[in-house]
Image (cartoon, rainbow, N blue to C red; front, side, top):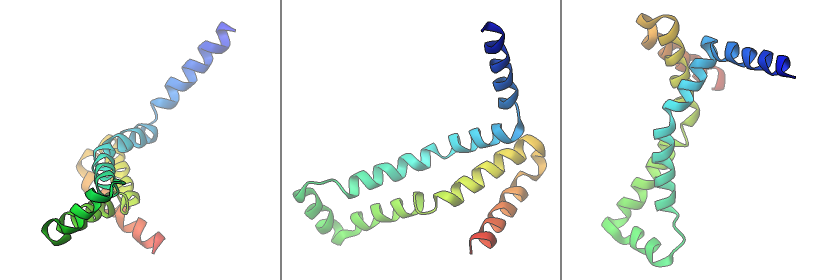
Length: 116
């Protein structure tokens, strides 16, 4: 049993050392602040109290409500682009640090071409 456990742990450590796995992990960690901003904006925008919703609609002619909606759209609406950019940037940082911006730009271009 201990031998199987040691082999499993060794295999998982070797899997963790792969550059692609490190890039995915670091890329997903890097988008946590973006997700938090979107989550706070969504929570503030859709808080289920009628007086609060009427205040949002009337405060500065609804500017604050539209601003919160914009924050939500920019964070969660463009989440796939954020993930693509972050993972490619981290992968290029590990493999070729001088070409990290080029790799990020190319990954966004490929993403746009593939998704339309």
